[in-house]
Length: 229
Length: 351
Image (tube, rainbow over all chains, first blue to last red; front, side, top):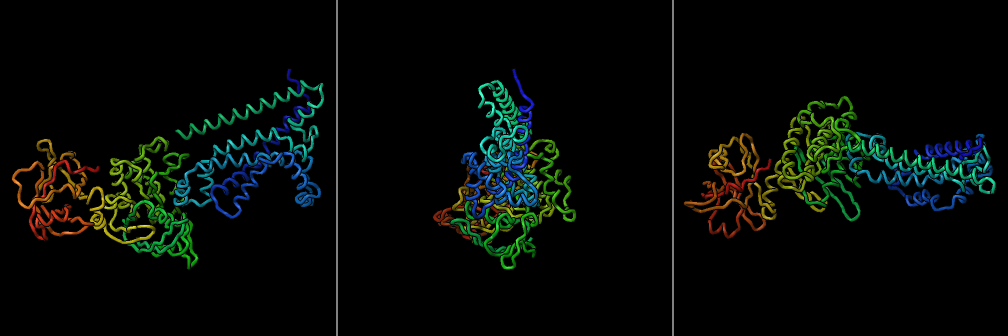
């Protein structure tokens, strides 16, 4: 009953690749941003907060359009990258950037929640025992916010799998090159004869989502067990 | 250890302005909560920057706004023991213990981990997870961890406040022995006069963000006799009791004391409130209290409308507390002889 064409399989693999790359790329930046927001006080903190959360409230299409303006041939960053021979627009890398931008606030929020639950005195203890701030970051803050990082990564990965609006604008909908699962379903949905094909891909999307949630659940249980030991 | 401090720090509506120079291995910082003790701990350890001023330990400048010096906390080698043990929950007992030791340069490693494990009796805890330890065990591990970082100073920020009474007096000997055995000076921060008496030699008293006086533990206890809920607490180390009629009879100076709550074969620490000593001008022929001591009054002192009577008996010293009118009726002056009655149940065993 499940009928997948070669293009469908390409779309599935591309979706996974884009979601994974976007999550891995956003992780260090998200961790750093969350750390800044939780542990540092500086001018313009509110501004950073608004900026980080903006993709959560903006329509993805708007984000896609801004990214297009930014990364396009005549865009501010696009011109700079062009000089180095790097082109993003209408490649799978553009899909990664679109997914990373849209999912970033979800990641930061989760990591932040994890960091906020760390007792400040644990950090102070670490410093007073001779650890530099970076040492403390790696040996205390990172392991103690691991649950938030895990939750954030799962959320971001799942959100990236579903990314549509921003992706279609910056990466287009080119089968085999930039067509991810949602874009493929969109194509199928516009022709009445392809209902089965669309349903098959929908089923795949459901399976992947369930798997992501399942892995997240298992990992966080493991962490919980370790902490109780 | 010689600590020189002269700092100012404003946080919101609270301003700390502390200046003092103290010397000694066992220094106390006493004050009610909110007086700025913890802020001072943060300033000394480098976790917080003073707005201006200078902090130096044994001639080494840790902070100076004038000379633009501010050592980061990891270079100050000042370890903190907080009220809560603050063990790293993601690490085991052993990794917690060695956290500071591993980060201490080889040249500064004077203390051997095994020695601390022995003194604090941590061996049976080493293989356990930190979440499986009791409150007292956690605090012992935290203490060991701090000492193993080979600090030049230990800051104990209300380390006993989260423990119940029994545990508190079980931990005190550990705190003392660790500092004495390994020669680490400490600053002991607390709002308990009794803890000050047990743990310190000199005390800085803080109030509303200022250090208002430098005093001795005994003087502190005397000053607070009238206002404290428990009066002045006489501390008695008693040992080798014999049992008489269901009471424990302890040698005390040239005499003996009868105590209800003793412990055979052990040295025990007892507290006796100044308010539990009843004074008689003449020998009462028969009383229910089991201890009747012939005393000489060696000193009288005032404490907020009450009178402290320093008694000498059997070559030992006790402080009793009476109101002014009682003093007149008893006709107490320095040098007068008097009888003191103490119930056997008034001695409270601390450990």
